[in-house]
Amino acid sequence: MICPDCGIELTEDNKVRKGQHLGLCKRCAKRIESLKYLNRKNGTNKEYIPLKDLKYINPIEYNRVMGRRVAGIKREESKSKRGRPKKDISIINTNKEDLKLTYYSKVSKDLNKAFKEANINPEYTKNIDLPSWINTFIGLLDTDDATNFIMQCKKGEDIFNKMQSLYNHHKENLDWKDIDKINEIGFAEKALNELRRPTKELLDYYYSIDGIITYLRQDEEFMRLLRSAKEDLDIKKRRHENPKYYSSVDSDFVDSEHVVEATEPRTKIFDCTVWCYNLNGNPRKSLFRANGGIQARNEIDAKLKLKNFLSEKFPSVIYNDKDITIKAVSSREEINELARRSCS
Image 1 (tube, one colour):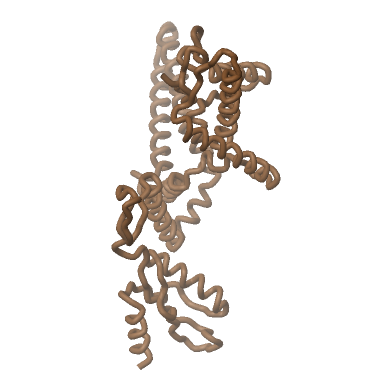
Image 2: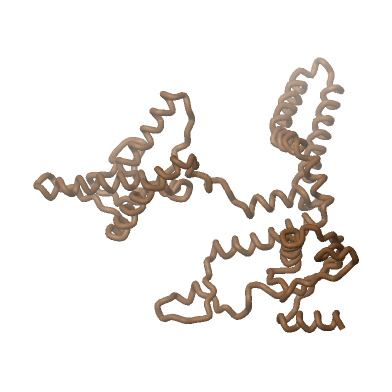
């Protein structure tokens, strides 16, 4: 058996034999009691996090704790080899885990020092989930009542308010002698108010940014870019959750389960043009075409790259967004042919 909190093998010497921590190793039990003592001493309410969970929440802290634990185990084993009573303490996959934890501990020590000097919080990835954040952001901007959670929240608030009005009128119509019924509806109102609280708080927060959401929703170009970013993030999230490596070569040493043959390019070539003024100092309206086209994931990405290129290389050029034309092509030769036709 192993300790469910840290993965260390439970033996007769290191397991808890009685009390509320049965099934844990002695070090994890001590860690729980130490946290309880500190919470009482400091008046805090910090939550106990098992080491198996800490590994994903704060890898640096996990490796620091496990590094100390492995070092302690090695010291005890060393003492037993010098003639002291032997303690049968081991870690699953000892060689692999020892090697990993040893170097994780060393590197974490260097990182902790460097992060401290740079004033960086090592937990910057703890609660950051960009795909979820973008989904929430789009949920705020969406005009569809079925997918906009604020619209849903407002409808929920309306139901809460109507229910409260129903309770109020019912209580108003009760006779003063109906003490039990008056008390009953009073308790019901209290329960309703407490159940309504999360909805009211969410809307209270939202109204602070309502003006920003309304403003952004009117920007069509921004909304297109946002939805394009969401599509890209969704693709990347699926890849991170199920890693696949794109390759045009094969190897007997690589597990084919994690390799996908690169059968098509990840980007396309787009012919990008725009009618504009002040191109190379020419005050007349003229056509600008991106030489050789622009390689991008989609039309929105290509348009953004074209606009960035114009602002960087031709800052004096004036154009209207609607005069930009983006067209997917099969090759750069096709773009060259289109350019020749436009000149002839």
